[in-house]
Length: 320
Image (cartoon, rainbow, N blue to C red; front, side, top):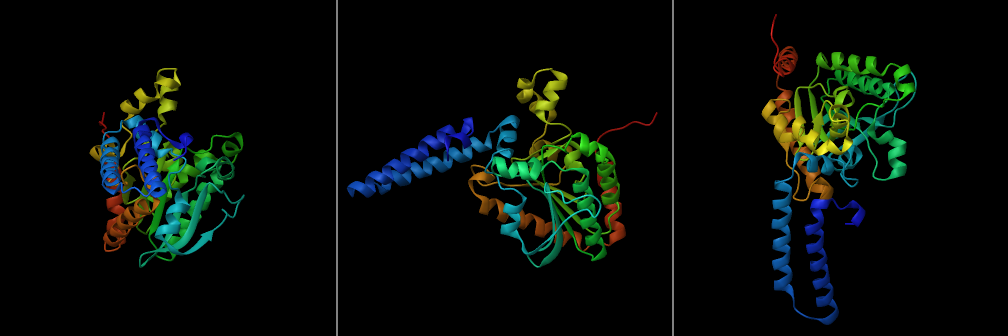
């Protein structure tokens, strides 16, 4: 992995990988049998990778979720779906490239997919606005979800955003209204909704396509009302306090499962999803298919009742 893509806690892994590559090169060049030594180092590497990723802090998991090589929505869809037909535009203003909407098949199930789309390099991120949706993106997503309701297709949603776009143009075109409308409409959409948080899930940017029957979350993703840096800037007036904020916010998958905010954690391969796109996609596909098959057996009226109850159970309130 190039040095610029190596996270600080991954350095021991990279160093051991270099040793293995050097030994393989020596064996190939000099005709020396180093198979036993190489196998021993590879076993050490596998154990080291598991141990490091098992003990990551909350802030380190945020860094993994932001890794430039982490699979994005289209990376996953290319591996888990077929019959992909993209839906463009909100029929009002324009097509927002920060969100991908499509008809597709996942396994034997025909679905509508809504997924926030980041890039892997600067040019692609600029094109996709770093996965930050404009109001027309939320309206495009709602248009696709209404089609899913019309054709009685489950909705599969992939969340990966640092937040809704906060620019002047977005505010002028009704950013808050678009997010609020989606939350309302998704709460009563008459079709199953399976949500997967695949990377970052920040604030209303995530919640604007984040109301559903089941919420899945990758092991190294994060989901919160605000980013650690945003929280640090407000509470501590110091962005360098982001690691401290991440601990206080309890934003990782294990925290949110304990709090009842998500329903299931999707395991990542040792070394994170960015180290093995195929295995991560296989785990995602398995979880989505399982949840679709559970939800399609539930009558719609009961499904809507359970969906509302799910969100009412979150948090604590008192009647005064």
